[in-house]
Image (cartoon, rainbow, N blue to C red):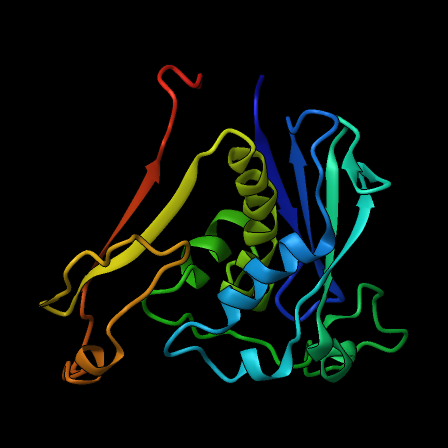
Length: 216
């Protein structure tokens, strides 16, 4: 059995889509099972202002019926509430009367540390917004949705997944016990780190009660 996922959508487009293949038929799953993971994603320490705008919930597009998976590809949609402020910029249709000054909200100066320059060169784009709208942290909401369904499958076999921030900017944290089911950090210690440039970080993820030879 092969598991794979793909995502589609832009940060300020209509929404994000996650497509997951390989989940067997008959797995009990609900939108609430996925939404709880999306809520955890939004609630982490140090999240940006975008998290205050969005209220992420999935809509099943395919692969689930009557509370069970069908064995076919599972597609999930998460709407972007911020789309209403970006419709003129992110509209898929070309302008009837092109602006002589070019596209609205163009990004022509690549940002250091981002995918702007590499993506613009790779795809031959003059406007880096075509790159950054995809290479955005917002895209991870679709990944979390796919991962939530996978976690649901693993729980059927008694397997639990946990993770924690092990080090940030030289501040080392001890492994929590028991290991939480979502990434955590010691906020008071994180606040003590002086931000004067790239900090560097290390995190640890573990699976518990994993059976031997679970496959690839």
